[in-house]
Image 1 (tube, rainbow, N blue to C red):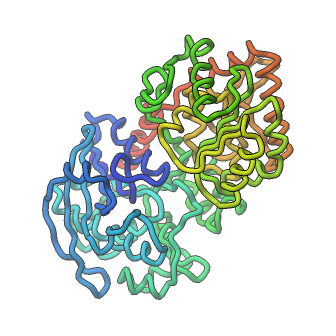
Image 2: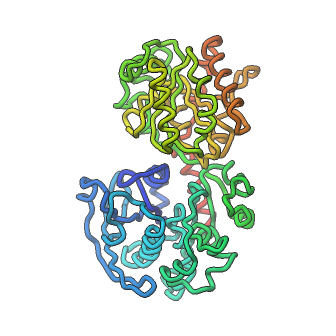
Image 3: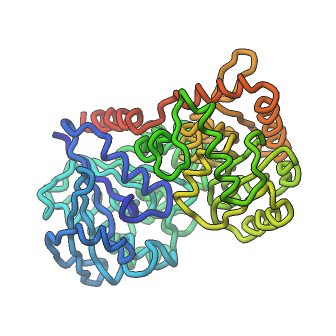
Length: 480
């Protein structure tokens, strides 16, 4: 039995701020349990909902040195959906209303977490063959494992994988301060290890010391080896290219299923969507006090409202997007300028624009089920889950060809009658606008073609079943 321990700073259903939590919460459920014993270890944040804290059982505690201080480390455990979870407890570090706060506090918090994970393993009755680390918060685990822990025979031979969910976030802080916090010798703070541009960089340390590095789509794995997408680490990514691969994130097909979704007005499937899907649209139009018209072209957007997601492009041509034959429904929060942009256009075109400047899971399901097209013009996108949700619900994605969007959305080809969405290559507002207009033309003037695009989109399988097999292959290769 191969033993895998997932280490991450968040995980559904306990705590979630982004897609990382979905991956860590879903992937372990889909790995073959006859061959892999997979467990997850995360911080026990004060802000985890009470109903999940009730499930946790105290296992043990100990004191650990972090540089010059002694710190309490409690270990709790719980089993949810057949997956075994461990929780690292320390109220000094994990109090607060959110898992992340000021970066300088997070730098110390996740140094503590990374060291505590390794220190806890001998007390878990579970010696992992592989520790699967996720994002910068776990970047020090491969570094610590390489350092002091090698003195203990128990730790020798444990392999590490570093998965990058978004290279933009690296966990950088002043080198002297990080040396003080971690207690790592100066040897580790050279340009081929933790040091980057004068600072210490947690993610860089993880990438440098892990046995293997993965990202969450094949295209993103290639893109981050170039300066434009490499966020200053493209040289390191090229140096590690022999042990770097992209494995696409999957989607939880039980949660995201138009046939059984409890949040939508009318359930439907790939066979009856032509008649039933539109009932969700008219219900959403009523709910949002928009003009009720089942024929109008409705574009959905569910996203963080940030530059990364391409909202500067939308800003540039929004007047043209909100044409009389189009409705736009936006859900999400982010930068004030974009929040206010959509509020303004809702005020200006009440009957055809709806700005929902908050996040609501139920409403997101309804938008996926109601819209005709889903817009994602990202500047960069490591994987992206929204386009997978849209495809699952028969909502045609309009995306920019980058990262996971490029890997998952094959563009419509009117000559071969193929493709499951619409895409544009350059980061250009008018190229995006032309693609939206082309999609609209197919929707209004070639309805049978539009329905065939939906047929093909609902038939593709981007569930975790596909991605989990690739992770299993990687684990087998690593353990040889």
